[in-house]
Length: 238
Image 1: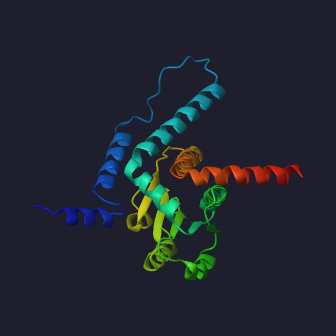
Image 2: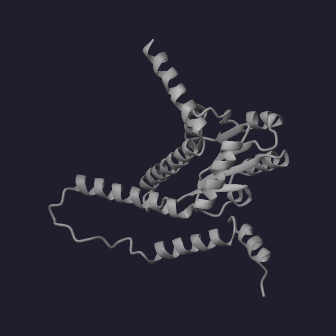
Image 3: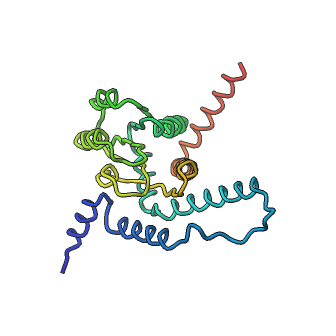
């Protein structure tokens, strides 16, 4: 028979975390292939194009968020929450559009009292890796996870005893396969502009849930958030 370790290694060679991840991805591909993209419910000839576009976008966003929720097991998310909450220092990295998600989430983590080091430049991140210590965590935002420098930075961070959490599309990619933990975003559409909107919507929903879980995992985080928000209000009112 085939050993479990052989199955895991085979799945990782394809860019997946393990066999369950590979199995889920295959199931999603089969489901999308079986759906008829041309099939649409009958609509009256005088249907308002404006309303139809709005309804279609809302349904697509809801579907992307639900698929993303199903693609990320509770055990993995709870493990990431514990990892982030217990990390002495958090490095958060994203390049280009991924940097927008990284900066926003880094700011929210800072409001919880976490020591966060955000980066959008791989050279600066590499220079700051000397400050990494065991149990520190690195969150890497990369939509496709294929940039070689990201894998290189992740390996160096792991060699220093840190843990890497990748946040990518729910596809096979090198960054995700070799991260210590991963979050996957499901967002697919035939039109590129809608696909990007779905990705952003599903990403925000996933990060919002992660943020709420972090708040509830540690009461001190909620108190620190309240203090920081009050300070910001006073600063804006002054």
